[in-house]
Figure 1 (cartoon, rainbow, N blue to C red):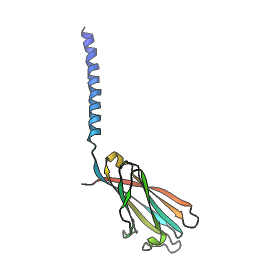
Figure 2 (figure 1 turned 90 degrees about the horizontal axis):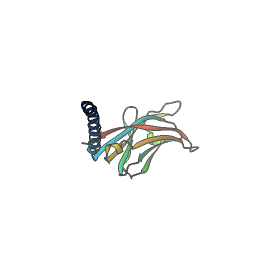
Figure 3 (figure 1 turned 90 degrees about the vertical axis):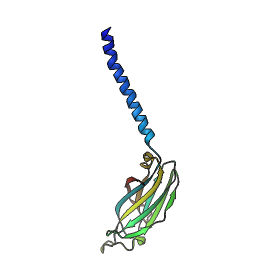
Figure 4 (figure 1 turned 45 degrees about the horizontal axis):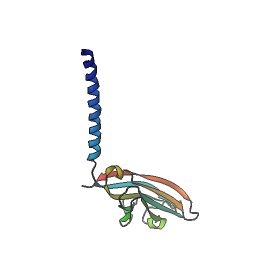
Length: 162
């Protein structure tokens, strides 16, 4: 009889441990609240004459968001700043930036290349797990042929708005 009790005690401890993990996991999921987040993605890119830069924001969540874009020179001067733009749930929004829009950026004499830093910002109110699904890409396209030259993804940094 004592052997059965000894075997049941570890089994009961394991069951209580598993139940405890389930309660902890459930309470962690319930703790995620609707909050406001700023998602900032940025990166550097060089634009040549006859090229166009496009920044696209994708909002795969079920909640609308707003976004805007800034383009900076190498010295940090703001070359371009868009208005806040509505990005509906499950929608894309693209910002087209021409080479001439970057006129204040330093230009390499031999190539005419203008090196800039682009920053896309999205303001989103919802769950943090959904905020992590919002992303931005950029691509360089030839204005002569219409072909994509370079496609990249901007890495996001997510911060709660307090």
